[in-house]
Length: 373
Image 1 (cartoon, rainbow, N blue to C red):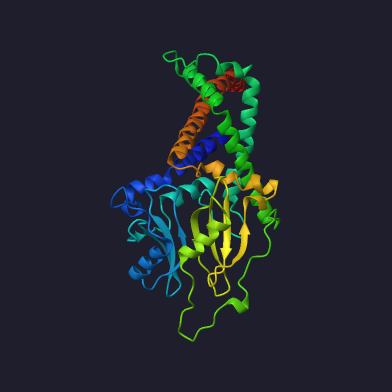
Image 2 (tube, rainbow, N blue to C red; image 1 turned 135 degrees about the vertical axis):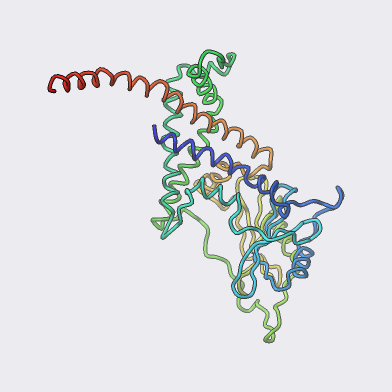
């Protein structure tokens, strides 16, 4: 069926997208972060800022992002005079700016191709997003019908796996399809449910419906913003002190992102994961005196938010480092091969049977044509 050809394409691109960051690491040396020796720690937050300012004096840092895996360089989103914005890779052990990030690299390309078929977002979510996320419904239906058709499927977990080789392609692919589906039940269910959420998310966004319990954005009080003479720069607390305030407010926080203020009244935002790796916590800190303006904890979410905010990392496998990504990649590869094997089974069985059934009708039409002639 044509829909399964589309599913095969989406599964294949999604599988590559899981490890696309690692592929970029292999082909782009600027992405790699190598410590001078095994005992060298990461530089402090303010030391990194000072190093970037020394090498890129015209740049204004807007965000610092640390990857989960230590072999990757951190990414700094920066702006330059003339409204030019880009990102640069910085070695977190030495502070050396290793090069600019591409505006659209392989990682971004694969995620865009898989997620919304590179179709632009105009006045709402891309219709490519809807097409891809809609596939979650037939995928979930195929899981349910497969378990219904496979009688007493749970027994197969305790029996010797049957994968017959040398008895023809149809038998081999049939065994492979059933065996792969059986051991991928948890993964298919996870991918289907999380993709259904992506579909619901697009509908909620395009209908201006929100389920968020987050309140009004925090701002720094006017009387707490220091005044300076024209041409001077407002002095902020060292970044290490501000991050320490956030980590003290959120015990167990592993800082991964620092968002710098866009104007004098914006707090600095420190965000990261903690004991629950699927969701971010954040603290907004007054950059002038270290006062905590707002905190977003796990306990601040309701049950629905807890579920929905967990969907994206569960779908992508991007929450537990390389080895967890590898698990998602291997099961994604298995799911891709299941789509292919299903196509082959359909072609060899259903398509051939249909062609055979149509032969008498064609013969009758040919005979009738001969009579009339």
